[in-house]
Length: 130
Image (cartoon, rainbow, N blue to C red):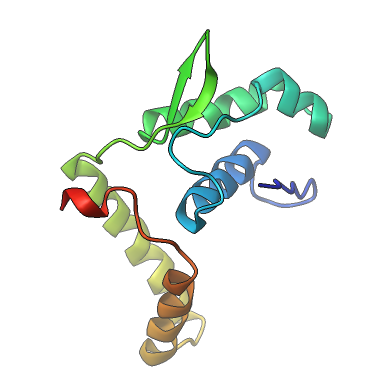
């Protein structure tokens, strides 16, 4: 999977890294058990501070999407989300949908956009556990 950073973006670099890794998991480009570059290696590849990559990796770890250890490094590992995740996600989704609605995108178009995005994701590795 290729990560592309937009240095001029209003989105912080660590958030761009985190978001692209989450999308990589959702699209199947990154599977459970896949190794990621070390924080220092990824930082060197982009010419950014390694603390920036470390912050992205730590967010992913806290979200249950990444396992970090000294021997194997950063490895994709998707844990079952706690119930609180669903509540927090719904609040964030509500704000994103409200922004789109306020900017003039009607409900039907919003639903179609959501369907198109979801169609690009592969089956969840957690699907069998439901």
